[in-house]
Length: 110
Figure: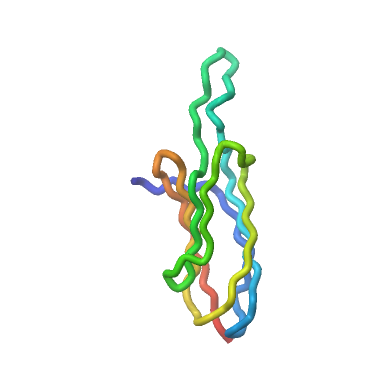
């Protein structure tokens, strides 16, 4: 399984106090091709969607979503979490072919 990154945007604070509730927003640039459209020559464009999105904080899953053909291109997710200790927050988007885009941010407890 090779990593094939798609451009991403992640908005989250770099620092917070223990017990704070923080908002995290993510966007991945991906076509989310449904497999129902045809190209200019009438051939079906193969299905290509981000099928799973997962976020881990200190190696525990804090958010996960499975997506389907009805999700628009460039999927956007927003959620909140409670701050514990300092550590990595890892974002993983996986498409139907098993290709992954992985981004990591560090959250520092002040």
